[in-house]
Image 1 (cartoon, rainbow, N blue to C red):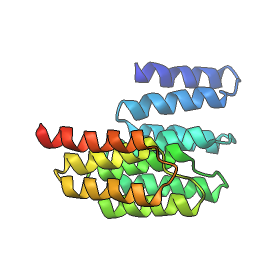
Image 2 (image 1 turned 180 degrees about the vertical axis):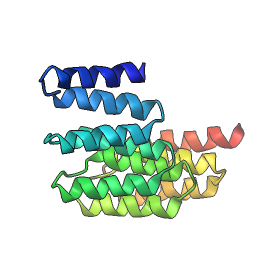
Image 3 (image 1 turned 45 degrees about the vertical axis):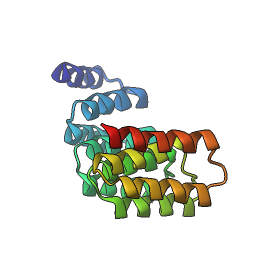
Length: 177
């Protein structure tokens, strides 16, 4: 299937047509979801080399592919390339890094991402918090998970009581399983 999609891209070009950004983003997403993050990167590079202008979706897609494969340095390199081109990250970008780092037990890096995003006027959301709590639970660091929830309660006045209760429930549910 992937070869066929790539052949289609070449066919479009051979017909003298320029694939649009949606076509490139779809191809990158297909590769990233299949764990073929290097091929997603190749498509991104091809877009740039062909004079196209990748957008936030383009970069987030490649970053997500690298993060899912645990290639965090490559994800960071792509992030740097994106920001150097003036494309600002969004909550999806940050949550992708948080999922990548927390899923591998790199909680110092998680804290750094959260600090960075706050410094750049991007507030963590409920998905951010769930991802961190789930990462701690996966690592069986339940006390750290509860401490994290306590920190949220102290520092994030926008986080609802219901969201905090759900986080506590997630920790307890994981402790019992």
